[in-house]
Every structure is written in structure tokens, then in C-alpha cells.
Amino acid sequence: MTDPRGSDQLREDIRSFVAERDWAQFHTPENLAKSISIEAGELLECFQWNEVADRSRVSEELADVLTYCLLLAEAISVDPETIVREKLALTRAKYPVEKARSRSTKYDRL
Image (cartoon, rainbow, N blue to C red; front, side, top):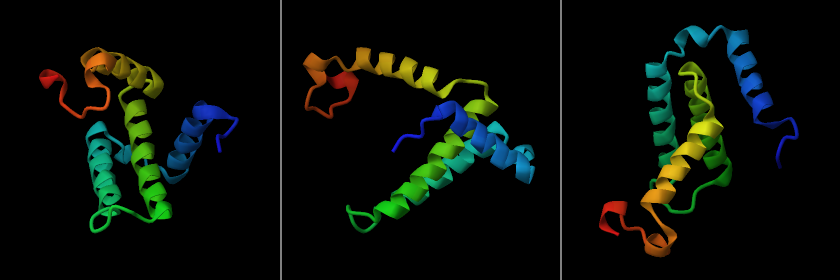
């Protein structure tokens, strides 16, 4: 279910959570990037021995990854939606539908 308040409110909720705990002092871009990698490893661990993972645990780890991504975006003053849309445009150009459809080949080998 989508929160009708939107992504701006989500980012504000995260900022408030961090401020209440005085954690912003630890949220350098470097530390946030490290945290994304660590949490992504924990997400991957959900699938370590089985391709079917516990949905609840996957959701929790994915939430951690997304939260740190949003915090990093704020720390480096970029808008997540903008950078995702810009990257999507670049990726579309690298992987034209007529060449990439139903293929996992890297763009330089299409």
C-alpha cells in the first residue's frame, strides 16, 4: 500500500527519526555508502542458501537499504527521483528494446 503523504513525507519522517537520536553527525557520505553495502549484504544473506527467502526478512533488509540510500541522497544534495529517472534514460539508450528484449547480455555485447 502506498502512503498518500508521498515520498517527501517519507524523507521528512526519516530526517525526524535521525534528528531525534542525534545521528546526523555519523551520516557522512562515506559512512552512508558503507552502510548501504553492509545492509545490501544482509539482504543478499536472505537468499544465501535458498532462492526463496522469508518475505518479512527481505522486506526489513530492503527497507534498511532504501533508508540509507535516501539518507545518502540527502547528504550529497541529490533528488532520488531525479537521479533514478536520469539513470533510467541512460540505461534505455544502452539497452534498446529491439536489441535487449528477453536478453541479459551486457550492453557492449548486444
